[in-house]
Image 1 (tube, rainbow, N blue to C red):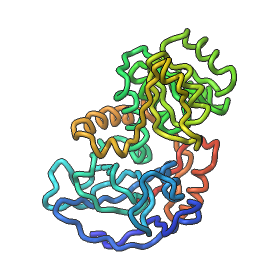
Image 2 (cartoon, rainbow, N blue to C red; image 1 turned 60 degrees about the vertical axis):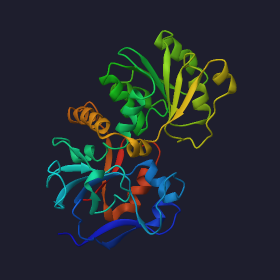
Image 3 (cartoon, one colour; image 1 turned 90 degrees about the horizontal axis):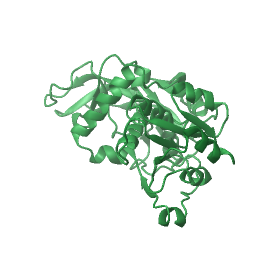
Length: 332
């Protein structure tokens, strides 16, 4: 039984690479309803950096705390009251448990979701945040059928790329707005139907490339003028769903869009969804996502894997613009 672990911790908020350190922590024994999970890999997500900065919506109740919000791990021990649906050696994720950049952690079995075998750990490590966000955005707000169009900004983000791949698997078509021209062909190779650079010609390009198709769902991960320009492309009665604010600009939607074009606006946060979701809904989503990831229809490029001891360098790398893939921590 593991009695102590190494973990990435922080005692104050500030510049992410400067506030983290690797600490040695004691690990208590497991209770009857708990499971011990050995961490294999963990991604560095934007939310992780926001938490270290102290700017995220959900912060630790107290400091010091263990950093990280997502990982893949393997069950190494379980309490006597844990059902047989969870077995030693099984891959699991725990979407609602904070503090994931550590060698091992303990969680109640009710917080765990099993991940089928056959998915590489570096991909399975990223199955519980961005793909579920994309899946719910495409399923929960507008009833879509094969051939329908969806428009999104932040198309090169983790969620944006997952939207492209999931939409393609559902025979939905996507319009994708990016800031850099070099991302156009890259996202088309991923399965995007239309990719445009945000500029003064964007609206005309979208109309020409979609044949003036109806756009009933818009997905917003940026805010600011990119959002307001995207909303102009939505059909009357269309819906815009905000899941992020990467541009760190206000939500910009005019009164005219709301009143005269009947545009509806919603927000979405996957953490809140997990808290309120039925077990059957979680299972349905993970069954679909696991199949797509196992078949390679969802694939997240990885630029580099760092050992935990190089956490400062890993965070600095994750903060760079223009990366070609995710930065992971190889823990187990």
